[in-house]
Image 1 (cartoon, rainbow, N blue to C red):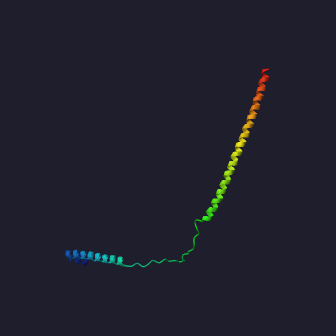
Image 2: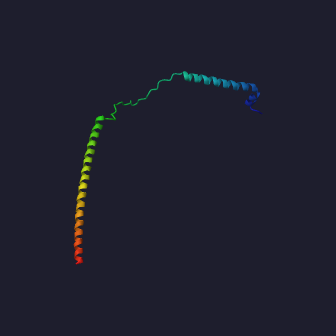
Image 3: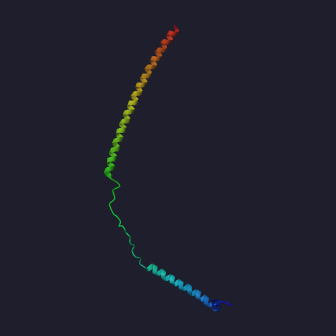
Length: 125
């Protein structure tokens, strides 16, 4: 014994199912087109910000301060000039000390040569 629903489906002609499916597809297509047209013609509401707490607006500090940059530049330039003068003085002092050391070494070398000459003179006697 077949259930009643199955008997009812078996008794429906195949032409009906074909037309039913085509009608359903046509109905869904028309509904989709209507929804698409409605979506394009609809005016969207302006978006509102939820400011809770409200946004705080204040003036931001300047990123570039010309006067401060000028002051720093003058200060650094003065420091560099001072350092340059110190370097020049140090080089001059090193050169004068080097000349003094060379003179001192030459005098000692000559003294050693004289002493060696005297020693040689005494050894030959």
